[in-house]
Length: 87
Image 1 (cartoon, rainbow, N blue to C red):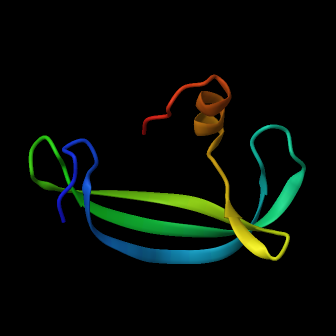
Image 2: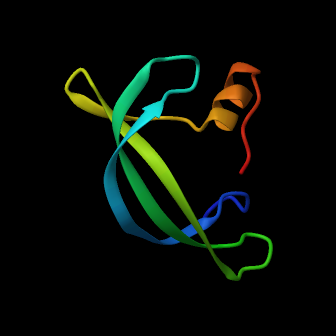
């Protein structure tokens, strides 16, 4: 799959774990029940063309009959500051 040279070419996404967890949403929202989803991402580094992996846990929570994904606190702070967050 081709890309513009700045976006890693995703090779594989593996779901490692899913569990219930209450989280405090960024921005001061009350504690919210969520599904924690731990994934391992395998992608090609656009600078070296070598595969890399990253493991992270994301949270999805129900909103009006559908699922929404939350931002991490650091991504939320970058967003409200008008910046594009970077890992």
